[in-house]
Image (cartoon, rainbow, N blue to C red):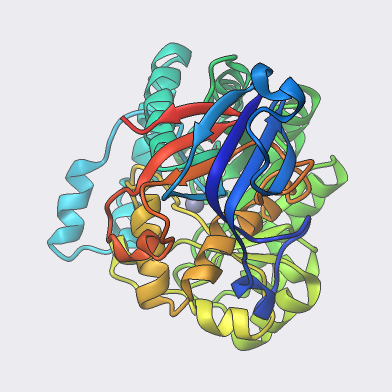
Length: 416
Ligand SMILES: [Zn+2]
């Protein structure tokens, strides 16, 4: 944590301490020739330029001249699976030849093959691989990331993944904060083949209590999908998680319209994610209940699926967040620049809405809209400096990085 004073910036930020919904998503505050002051890692001033030597006060601050550059809140990637063993490049080549994600999964590929590799790995190897992803994320402006377990599917390995994330979060040199999610219900492991209900019982009785007692996760998530976890099984698991004090997320309506988004509304989940096939009624229910709709356009792109209906969701009054879904199977990309481009080009979101979706609404999807996601007094000094004073470059500069420097709690990390 540092004291930092940024001068001459063009500040571009959503405003507020909760998710922005519907028409509010497109409203950004823009301040030209701005000063932003960060004291001990927290924003203590945002406004018109102040004199550099105010009362001799600023000699205790690092100075940064941001003339000709935009300053945005740090990006919040609120849905990833960045801790895993192995790769699935082979499987990717099968998909290129036309095989579907679900058919690969049914013949022992997919998540289960990453489970094998993760179980065969260890703390040090998983941690160093995950740390490599965090460095790349930081260079693209990410200051907070959510990470999920779900490649262990047994008590030992699920806890191992969560411990790797905790260790990375507690690292004093970290550039990215990590929010952990327990996703034991990511798939049914081979040893429970055909016994999904028993596996749900095992998660509730054996694994979840350990996760909670060791304070290893804030959220519980489930892959609610045809042939994986049904609506009934997902509801049972999530109600147990809620009882144990975890906040809720769902992988919902990704492959078929099963009604996961409606379940998210019923249970007041913090977010429902994917939503490629969410029904109109369920979208309205999410808007009414304030469930954040987290959209993952890189996954739709990689699977050649139709994009989620971001425009309609915003028009229905939803709070939409964007995230990358970085994972070794369906979407091996944590590209923030490409996420911006796809959201604006294919999901018909405005540039301003996409910025809100990757900052304040991403924070809201992690229950952190009160502390990150906008450049406002009292929030963490997590920010992104662009190479340009024109924030339209974010989607326009397709798939290429226009981040000059990432600022984490007042510490400057120039993009390599
Ligand atoms: Zn996911």
